[in-house]
Image (cartoon, rainbow, N blue to C red):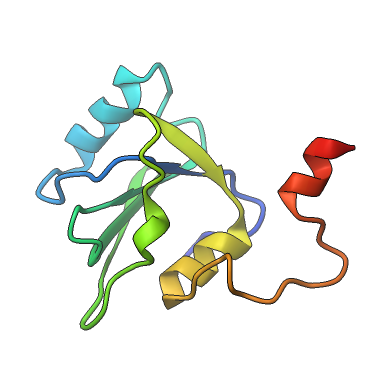
Length: 122
């Protein structure tokens, strides 16, 4: 059962990840950056081909891994910011758009959502 929603804190790796890695190795990659993989955050990893995505998080009793492989096309080319190693925050709406293959920059936003650039200026 897909147990993710807008209440989860979502972070995405900024660099491509080897998709042959399993849960233990991905947890090690999170720990190397000083984070705790069992802290309730949702961690997203995408392969260098941008066709495969792994999402994992901790639920009561163990880790849950979601695996998405695109049959055709690729995830958006600007998925990797190329700015160092680590994770960047992502909203639930951005994750849903990404999973559907829609660029978050192009998608229409609701009127009540302020862009992050606006919030930084205030």
